[in-house]
Image (cartoon, rainbow, N blue to C red; front, side, top):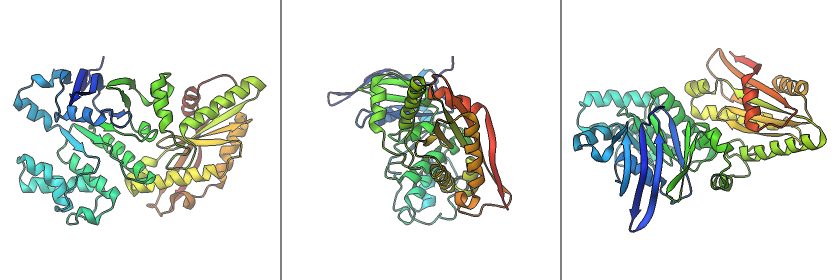
Length: 403
């Protein structure tokens, strides 16, 4: 069994006699993004502060690689603290410092690096995060999205093992929220850090997290994968997620996944009652990561939005479509068999135009690929099973090269 990198065991914490954590158990695994969700004021940020050692528990244990933090000596605690970085909700950039000095601050605070080493590390991270030549600009001179990237560059400049993210998309519009999520996901894969995040952005956060934990009344009431939380029967968890559900996905304007699950169940019920059938199509933008890397995260979100718009504009009034992941769109087609589902994909492929999706001229030879998997539903199944089946057998139906 895999050992957790960080583990809470029966942790209790009170402030002014008010209980916040009440027997909290939590496991964080190395190399994953784990997201803590829950109502406002339940203690999610308190959890983060326990991890980094800013707060100590009243009772219970917090372990790092199996070793209890409270039993470590001061030297071991300092060494451990250097493995962490913290991305604050407000970015916490200093207005009196230029961008270079903001990013360099953690290195200079440690006092273990020469100015030459500081310069090299800062420049390297700025290049990796597409920050361009803004060294001598001040935070007030750059956009909110760029401030988030600057804050992430500062968090990464010390080569941390673990980065804690406290509501990293607060105050951003839907496009930039998704851009920041994708940025965190992409750089986590690139640098391999362990991410622990507090967020209310449901379902968006499910697209980039490997594990989800829900804190409620001082305890972790759910811990598992995004797929598992989507299928849980726990009424507390389901009611919380439904309570955050909005009429439409903020990025694409499509119905949310919860609404699509309801539509799927309705079609299954209709199929069983009237002996009808329906199909599900799963589109995947195969090289969205390449677009993000070569053209920027904002360009990648624009591509996803434009593709979603093209799909929305070409479905029937009885059909429904929704995001199914960071690079996936699903469509439910009532009274549609497998042959007709293939025809729907072929027709869409024939009508799509590159300039309607990309909007910008990419580098020569760039190839934009969308694949489609589809399944006809003839018997009772869950939407999760159908999506997995549709994704397992995909057909490349649309490809164009921009020269």
